[in-house]
Length: 246
Image (tube, rainbow, N blue to C red; front, side):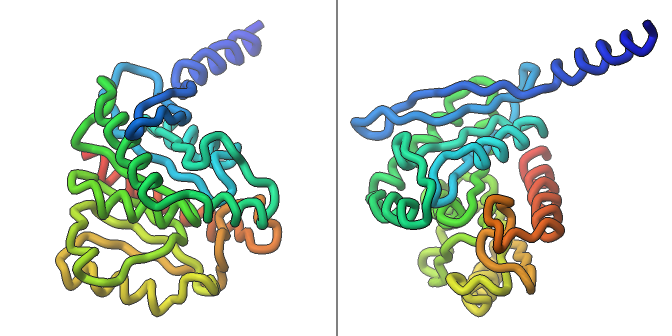
């Protein structure tokens, strides 16, 4: 009986802290777009995070990352840049990624920022972006276009390296990259870091020497590196706590 009571008490405690999720709609220009909103328990206000998917689309893995962030006390909005489409093959993913107009993506990401900022349980001065692969590049784009963004996490995403672009950034930056990523050369990563530092920006770069592209996603059977992925997640959560929970 005592064991049963302990189990029930534990389950109740866990449920009281569990994040909730729901589909939300908001305006992006003349269009209405959707995303998944993950919310911690309690009243808040909480820091907010825009969660941006890989080239596969808003699939279960990305939703899991958003849910994990919500469990840590953030309102996480997982955006859907593909309007409901999810790729299952690299060819399909490549096609979907190429089919997203740059201006529409920028508009959608700004709309996501404004949506989070409008939520009564979100701290308007503590909003970040995070993304992987294609979404990592878009996370940088959010930092470039939103002057009051607090922080941005770039997981092996495309980089801007010219000072005229990077001087627009006010957010703290965490960049996580693989040393064997053939699409994002280490020299470009180091130039990105050097330019930001020369501009007086707050930046932290981590390069995992033996990792390739998309090494954090276990669905990447050939390139997944469990130890590096665990360390990257640990660094990500520490960075977000340091920048958003002050």
